[in-house]
Amino acid sequence: MRTSTAGDMMLKGKPRTDFTPTIHTMDSPITVRQVTTPGTERSP
Image 1 (cartoon, rainbow, N blue to C red):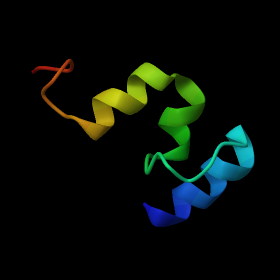
Image 2 (image 1 turned 90 degrees about the vertical axis):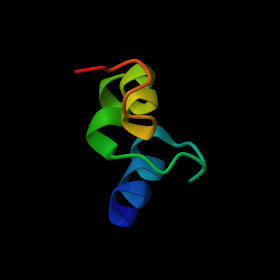
Image 3 (image 1 turned 135 degrees about the vertical axis):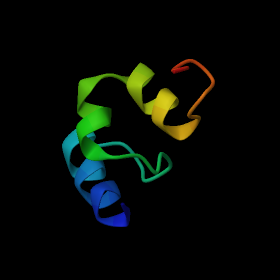
Image 4 (image 1 turned 180 degrees about the vertical axis):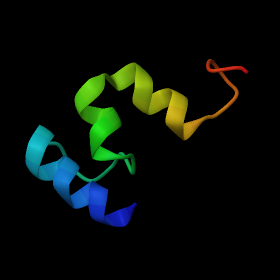
């Protein structure tokens, strides 16, 4: 997923502070939080 970070930085223009998938980052910041912390908001 390190490769996604590079694309994320180019797409969003933000620093590589958020190590999250580019797809989720483009979707919404909320989704990124859910991916980083599975089980916090997105509970099965």
